[in-house]
Length: 245
Image (tube, rainbow, N blue to C red; front, side):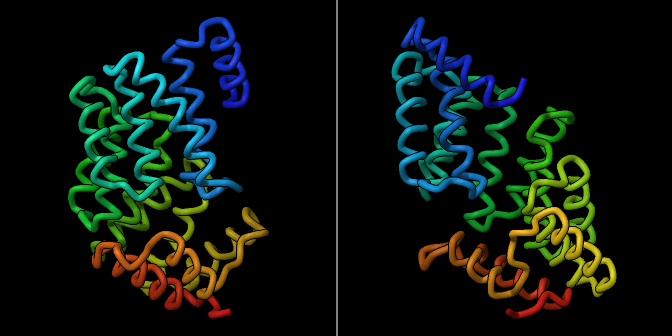
């Protein structure tokens, strides 16, 4: 079933029972997921709509593990990492098999510069659910953490794993090119850049665009290690031959 059809079913379920906690929490994904993927035209509004839904679900049933997972994602997108961590930990307390909570912790840890911890939680999620629909996100995040730790060969492998699962997901392509740049594999990097041109023709492929992306993902309060990671991404892209403008 495609996501749109699933959301319509949730909306119909809520017409029948406005207190259906599963429908409320799942429908929240319709709003927060585009924000987390950088595809929302109204991030602040969409996060509020998603938060309203999942907060209603949790008010009705505080022990809804995946409600806390979704709340963690919303809080992370709002830059409230400590609160997001608490929600993910609550989800795991309620349901130790809630693998997305491990991923949420890993995403938070990445932004906090705790790359080693991020890798551990990503590996837990992958081990517990090796065929999960979110696997490409996890391998992509793993590639980023490995790149941050200067484990460039391993980062290449993780990025390629993410791309093999879903080539239409952009972030691992960027990580792959940066890691290839750091390892001096310019021919492969050029091939990877050409692949982005084919898959994402509207995406600007320059160092200037990467700097804009960094400015969108970081601020003056960002952890120094996370800022260093973005500097390493940009330096790797430059080494790979990505043009400045």
